[in-house]
Each structure stands twice: as C-alpha cells, then as structure tokens.
Length: 401
Image (cartoon, rainbow, N blue to C red; front, side, top):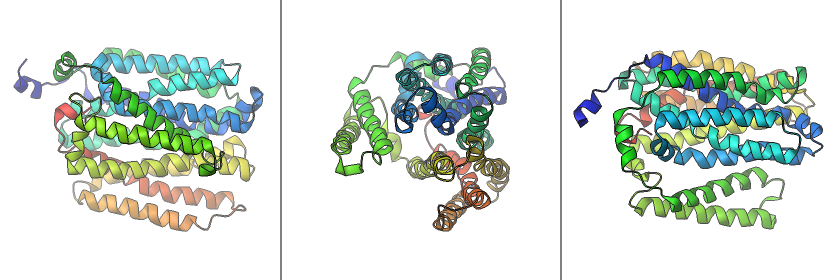
C-alpha cells in the first residue's frame, strides 16, 4: 500500500462510536486512580492492616501505571494497536476482579501492580486512536469527549468510591469495573481497526530493553519516593536518599540513551516540535494539580475533618459538574479566540484558586472546601482541550502514538 493511500485511509466504523468506546475504557481506568482513595481505611480494617500500609494499594497502582505510560506507543506497535488495547482491557478487568476477592494486603497490592501495568496503556492508545480517526478540524470535539474521561474521572472517583464503600463494600470499588470492561472489550473488538501505517511500523520493530529498563527504574523510583517520602521524613531517611539516587540514575540515563539509541523505545525527537514540547510541559503541570488535589482533598476531609467516605468524595462533585459545563464553552470559544489566550485564562483561574486556598485551615467548613475545589475545576476545564489540540497540531502522523 502506498504512502498516498495511507493518507487517504478512512475507518470503516463511525469515528464517534469508536471515540465513545475507547473513552469509556479510559474513563474506567482513570477512575481507578482515585476511586480507591476514600476506601483505604475500610480496606485496612478489613485486611487487618494499618492505614499507612494500606496506602501501598494506591502507590503500587501509580508506580506500575507511570512506568507503562511512556512505553505504551512501543507496546502498541509491537502487538498491534487493537490487540494491545484489548489485552489491556481484558487484563485490567481480570485484575479488578482479583483485587475484589483479595483476602490479604499483599494480594491486593500485587493485583494493583498488574492492574496499573495494564491500565497504563489505555490512555495513550486512546489518544492515538482519536488522532487517526478524526480529521484535524474535528479533533477539538473528539478531545472534548476525551477530557470527560481524563478530567472528570479522577474528580468523580472519590465521590463514587465513597458512596459504594459506605453503602455496600470496598470490594465493589473493584467489581464495578467488570461489566464496563466486558462491554468495552466486545465493542472494541467489533469497531476498532488498525490503520495501515501501524502494520507497516510493526514489521520494523526491535525491543529496546535498555531504554525500557532505565524508564522503569527512573519513573518507578520517582513515584515511590514522592508517595512515601513524607512518611519516611524525606531526605533525613536512607530510604528516600536511596530512591532519589536511583531516580536520577534512571531518568538521566534514560534521556541520554533515548536521544542517541538507533531505535529507542520512546522517540524524544518529537520534543523538537515547539507546540508539542510546550503543551506537554503545561499538561504535566495541569495533571499534577488535577490528580494531586483529587487524592489529597478527600484524605484531608476524611482523616482530619472527620467526614465519611461519601462526604469526602462529595467535596469534589461540584467541580466535576463545572468541568462538564465548561468544556462545551471552550469548544465554542476555540474558533473565535486565540487558543493561547484560552490557555492563559485557564492557568490564571488556577493561580487565583490556589492563592485563595492559602487561607485553608483545619476548621474549614464543607461549603468553603467545595468552593476551593470548584474554583480549581473552572481553570482545568479551560485547559485540557486547547492544550491537547495544540500539542498534536504539527506532529507527523507516524508519531501520533
């Protein structure tokens, strides 16, 4: 098949049907990053563990997830995008079931590692599908749909997790993934297809074990250090210092290797594209705010303010509603307002919200805590779609993954 025919490739299935299905899978996976958060005290009590020990249920997932994210493009080409997506969903669903029936803490930590590993490939693959299935002029709308999964899911997670935990059992926080996983597997099997250039790239593939190892070392140790550092008294402990050194070795070694290797597992040369590089840095900052606050705020409400799991999750719910309402407005504004001004407004909203949040005290009431989080959410709603659209606007199609 010629390169010209590659450019003229059109999927057989309706792009919007595919977009909904792959976004549903990603929604399920991202929901799992925060839905367990408010259930940790119940998990600890049920499995005869301390709360501190139970936090490894969250840490283990995030570590595995963070390692797989940057190498998911390679894995997608290795197995074929459709097959890789199906493997990820099937195994994620199976691991969800295993987490739900775990009877020991070490079991649930092990299954969460596997769940995070297979879940980590879903979000990058979903974005690759949207880029290939939609024309450049329609990608803003597609990314608007995607933002519902990426922004709303971590905000909704604590609310849903709290309600399930208080009314049923923490085990249903995991069992809820099973019907969603089955539906998405069947739908993706029927609808999704690999574009011709994916098959072509698979033929030339070789495994960069050194790159994979350095990425796993750097990102894995970084995640553990950041997550456990406070409990270990940061750099006053040998634990934190050891992981900091391993993080530097892994990340610096990975950057050097990926820049000079003939066939690196991650192509860093796409960072030469100014739009992609700047958007990636800004999205990293946005993600830190989104996921960080989605984890910390429910913990504050539950542990320090004495809220139930349900009420600690409800702190985030109004913010999720605001994001859903903001995204259609952003899509309307993008054709008539320069994208950089929309992005600037979003970060200005975030800065204002965090400046206001400096007044947070241990005796804060529910309504004020909701207002703090809602103010952050308005800014987040103005950021994801413009940043994602700008990031891929000038990237060659072969680098979409």
